[in-house]
Amino acid sequence: MADTTLMDKLVSLCKRRGFVFQSSEIYGGLGSVWDYGPLGVELKKNVKDRWWYAMVHARDDIEGLDAAILMHPRVWEASGHIAGFTDPLVDCRHCKNRFRADDPRIKGTPGQPDAQCPVCGSRGTLTEPRMFNLMFKTFMGPVEDQAAVVYLRPETAQGIYVNYLNVLQSSRQRIPFGIAQIGKAFRNEITPGNFIFRTREFEQMEMQFFVKPGTDAEWFERWREWRMQWHQSLGLTPAKLQWHQHGPDELAHYARAAFDIQYEFPFGWQEIEGIHNRGDFDLGRHQEFSGKKLEHFDQAANERYLPYIVETSAGADRVALTLLADAYREEQVEGETRVVLGLHPAVAPIKAGVFPLVKKDGMPELATALYHDLKRRFPAFYDDSGAIGRRYRRMDEAGTPFGITVDGETAAQRTVTVRHRDSMQQERVGVDQVAGFVAERIGRD
Ligand code: GAP
Image (tube, rainbow, N blue to C red; front, side, top):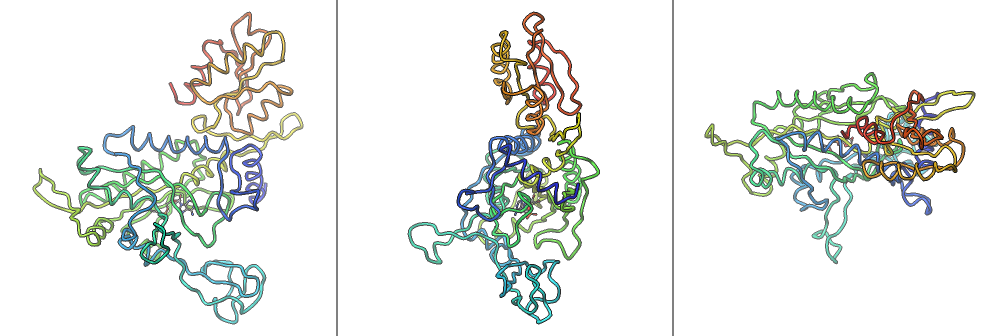
């Protein structure tokens, strides 16, 4: 299967089955903004819940936070985003398309007669690069002047830095400790694309770990290992995950060291999470710009210092896309193509489909009762329309790991068949055991 075809099929399945829709579709859509449908919202929620569990609930040294999207504009001066969060932009005067100046498809130097537009092929029509800030601007209050400008945050991290003392003082934590946050971020990307991979509105799952200077390299290595393990725990194909170390030319202005976790998408190896050793850049800048002391006093050692920060920053949408791309497969079964989303049961939107084999002999009543029982514990779906094979196929496409069928033996023997999505094998399980059987396999028991 050609790689572009795989992405097309994935986008089409996501729309058909209610994972992801284009934003404002009935108005023609809004560029690179997407909405999550009933199955997509469950998938992304499962990703975020798993991250929150691993970061906050399973550990004693990380606290949660939910900071506002709008922040004081000085935050973005201190962070360097007003001065430096820019991309070089070029326009084609002929076809009116817009590119990043470093777009590898551009031949020649933008602004020069030899430069060729990668879309319409015209020569000499690309403008000189001009710097373009990726932050979305809006106004606070009724007057739309410079003094009222506020920004939609381009990352969630800054909300953590400006709250670090609040959290430290209110939580009884001690350094080393971390603050985790999940929330929306916005970037006016020049070249968004590849479905939900690069969008203008997205969700980040960021954790900032505050450590004593000198211990940062050690913590950085620990966090690299833990984060890779987390991605592996989602059931991704191990050979499709790799590290990419940032060279000196790639390092962000705040980073002393940086590694990306990359996944091999149908469109190539791309970053899904960044792990950065940010040193004392962030707290140092906020201390300078706010005039407030952000140092930590270590009573035991009787010393005062500005903590260093190790950051782990992942995109919830990107992880969701990674799961979908990794899970999609087509198989030939009895002369028909079976489309399966082989999602890990823990992230699958629906955990079990419940089906009466036929709509008579008391089977619908038994199946409905079982469905209500399961739904109290995890998302389940009831389906009594069409041939049983079709119902299984619909659940295969939705990534549902278990299909539970009430049949002629159920009433007398108090058993149902459980069909496994991946192997399509079936086994008989007691009606009273089936909720526990599924719960155990999705990590709830
Ligand atoms: N605080 C550091 C930071 O924001 P980043 O590498 O710019 O670092 C971190 O972003 C993660 O956020 C990326 O690895 C990616 O998963 C996600 N991300 C960034 N820009 C995105 C976009 N335009 N669309 C979707 N996800 C994005």
